[in-house]
Image (cartoon, rainbow, N blue to C red; front, side, top):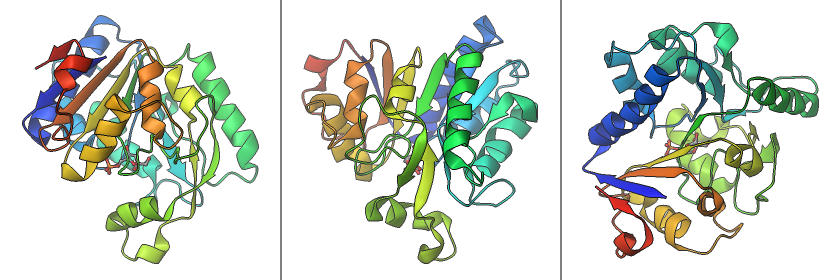
Length: 249
Ligand SMILES: O=P(O)(O)OC[C@H]1O[C@](O)(CO)[C@@H](O)[C@@H]1O
């Protein structure tokens, strides 16, 4: 595992964008996994500002979507991906895949999404955020390490955390469709991003704690190719991180 501790959100954006852009410049047909939420916003902004990379041949799979929401609903992750990734980077709609939160048969839609990733040859680089409770995508505590794309109930903590994006806390959906931890672990490279003091405890548990379903993000320890980029506040509890990881910038 490689850990980069950077000063703040802007530096996190620049560092993560560099990893993504280098991959896409070397392999224009790369398959990218996209996280939503606040953490990756500076990354996508930096990719947009960097005009030297052509993303038109990349294929993207989003991690999750709220049940009951879909683009163009402003809080849907489908809309987020359109607005912050697809449109600014010029990636055609047919290359962007977001779990279907409004399908009549959600289970069938989840299976279809998994088959889509497989048909694309798997995810080359998966961008990840981390929840305050250690969730990865919407895999809440208790999620199995081999779980696949499925419908999940959101914890109250997650609903409270994401209420900031909604006009009214009671409008935060109660369920979501999420890639499973097993789906995420199948990506060839994981890029976990964390910023802000509210993530410090989750980051410490994910990197230094035991691999446990109590902290879903701890499964990244099972993956052979992980880069963690954390700002100083998110990394503040890592203390002895140098002993755990080969690279500390
Ligand atoms: O980056 P944020 O907004 O703190 O969100 C943390 C994580 O929670 C989610 O919103 C739930 O999937 C992720 O999209 C995100 O990576």
